[in-house]
Length: 250
Length: 324
Image 1: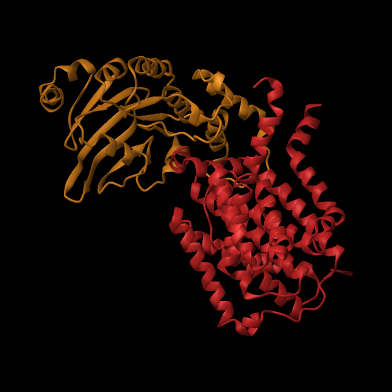
Image 2: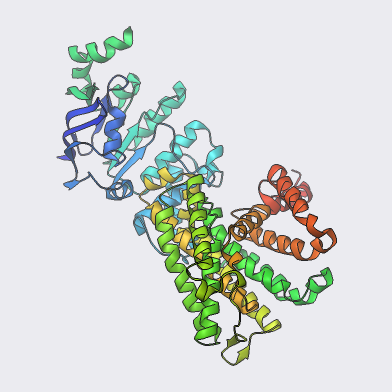
């Protein structure tokens, strides 16, 4: 069953057609990679899914609910989280505070007037946040300022933030961009280890990452989906070699 | 045991503040503070604590908070003059009026961030200032200010001298305590997250705009309470209450004291008013020059304000014992 159904989505910036009649179905529980050359529309598509951009045409359904014209925070409340290309965290807060935010967001919704409720009195919620942090291996940084973490740890913290309000769909925009090889490998391990039913859509340039994680790959070029299939099918697809791998070898 | 520890930990600053504030009539005159200045300092403590919920937590710098202070002061004055000399209905109506204005201004100005937000708030405050001086002159007294209020009463109690001081101080302690409660609540966490990374906050399922508006309105309520108490303290309202000068003074107090710490801005308020009213006697008109130099020195060398200075001293003299 498709958890995400993108139907005939088109979007232009002035004369540039960033997305043209994109159709994409993401199956529940799978890891789906979106690849394609620079400017193919991958990030644009992710921005449409998170409410940052409104397409000119088409529809997006998440678990039977329309996503277009819905605010970013409501989209997140529906169960879609996004990992940014540069880790988006709350740098001036401690690691624990960073993860406490989504925990309260999951309990209270997008807005709650509980101005006089003591956070520290909510032991089970704080413990849940601590557990999330430990699961991502940041237990030694619980009370460190998030901004002082290494890049790899910032990425882990961002994942902890994203996972703490139990999303059903996780969007990852080049999660290993700018990472050293060993950090990339750690990230792959991390993503593999959280296979517990979360659907993942990953935009990535590193083919090593794509082929070790994805069960299905869609290839975007010039705003259109030109191929779709299993990693093996994509590797040998002539159109893909022409549009993507071919270009990469020039 | 732990609950007791928590109580002390959470309320330590409030208790220390209460102790310092309530004993002020005894030690403040020894420093040359004239009678009544302590009350004024307490009123401004309320103003800046509220202002810190907006500036310190969310990072939005308003240059128009005098509007809420002034509107509330005018409404309090008019209520005392023409409705009843009891301050309770006067303060309630005044704060309610200022809050309504704050909701409208907040909805309009919070669409923008940074300098645009600051300028928009300034423009709104100036609008109210010129309204008080022109079309509303009949009620506000225009240039002459609003005068002729009866002695304000708290039911049967005449609000004069020490009674005003203790009433204002009680309000200041209560409002500081509530601000601390907000800081420790989930709402406080969301407000501080706005300052850190608004995009991440929205992608974490939080409606940042509503929390911003809430911070804006809460800070306006504090400003309005301060404005109303100003009239109880001294039965006069001048249009300078609404002016940009007033808004700027609050910003300077916050920055000198330490934005985002709640305590710092109160230190800043105490310092500024003491400086303005006591030390300036020796310096004459030059005191603004000295104040400007102090402000620059703080911003350049101690961007965290007095609170940063205190933290540095603590670190230097108290952590060496631990072998740091």
